[in-house]
Amino acid sequence: GNFMKKIYTMLLLVFAIITLVGITVFADGNRTKIEGNTFIEIEDYNIMRQPMTIYKDETASGGVYVGTTVNSYQMNSPKRDYEHLTYDITVPDTDSYFVWLRIRTPNHDHIYINFDDGVYKNKKKDSHAKENLNEWTWCLMDKYWLTEGDHTLKIRYSSPNVQYDAIYITDDYKFIPE
Image 1 (cartoon, rainbow, N blue to C red):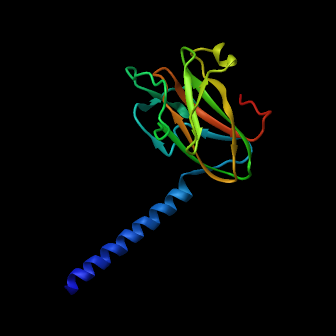
Image 2: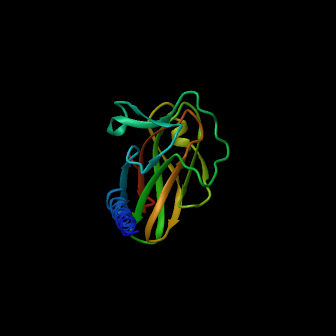
Image 3: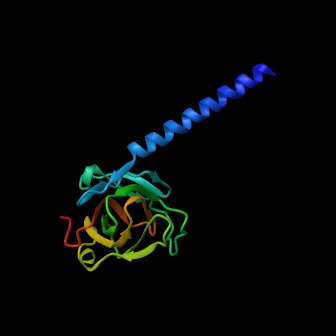
């Protein structure tokens, strides 16, 4: 009786410590603060799921990019609750924020992106990117109205041809990455 109470109490204490440490590490170590024009390497994700994989490439920022396996299937309508790349961010003000992705693709593939639990927006490569097939190109994904505080950017796989290299998030509508 008394021995089991001690074991139970110790297990509860260990569980409480693990939970608190996990929350602290997550909050302090894995959230990007958006300040001005904020650059994020694609490999600095919080969550990455299959079929996404990291590949080495000297032409990519940081020497790597995230893409899919060659025999991955086409995704025409993403589920709201499933993402392949997740980035936890904090924005300082309630404002419109613009998301740019540096991508490479041999055709005019679609890209699905959302914030928090919103509906995925189906974004096709913009006209500038269409002129630069098979080259790393910055594409404006969309403008998002975000409230001050924490948010989650989600990128959903759409086709096996898109390669993702980097992200810019900014509140400056005139900003164009180079």
